[in-house]
Structure formats: C-alpha cells, structure tokens
Length: 140
Image (cartoon, rainbow, N blue to C red; front, top):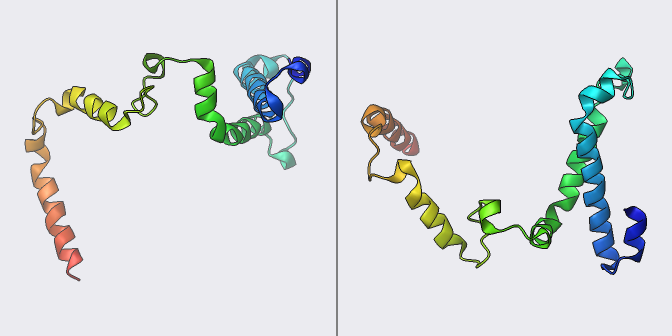
C-alpha cells in the first residue's frame, strides 16, 4: 500500500495523510489482536523499569496518530463518502444546516416530549435549594 502511494496522484499532503490512516489501521488491527499477540509470545512484557505494560507504546502511538489526523477528519469523512444517516451526527449534515438539525434532534428526544418532565417534581426542591445557595454566594 505504501509503495502504491508513491504513484498515486493525490499530492504530497494527500500521500502523508493516507500513510497516517494506513498506519492507524495497522496499529488498531494489532490492538484488536493483543490477546493473541501476548498469548503466543509475539509481544513480550516489558521490563518493570520500562513500565511493565507492553501495550502502552501501542496505545500511545494510536493516540498520537488520532491527534495528528484531527485536522483532516472532515476531509477524510467526506472522502469516504459516508451518508448523514451513517454518521448519525447533527453536526456533520451534508446541507450545512447544523442548527436546524440540532433543533430537530432535540425536539425528537423523548425527554423533551413535554415542557416539564415528570421527574421534575422529584428534583424540584433540590434545584431550588441550589439556586438559593448560588444567589447567596453571589452576594458575597
């Protein structure tokens, strides 16, 4: 795959992003196979002075790659062609009407079906006490 990227017409930045995605895929695949890797001795426990956990460096590398890919997330999501339904996110709607999508989702939530939820009567006293204390503290 990496060798094929040399010939791809994606540009230097595109090549670098695809390399990171490929490395992330490999590391996540290795993470999913940790039990087998440890059971067959392919991944040996580190010495106590190294931290003792052979999975730490793998998980750190995954985290670093994820952080490095954050600026590319929107472009990658678009490139993979996921639909709004698959993403299930009001923030990434195709038409760009984020606030309308958030409002519609909020209206569709069962907890928002009534103006005041039925459970409110059970927590009303606690909320009012908190408001009184906040006002008293604000005067200090």
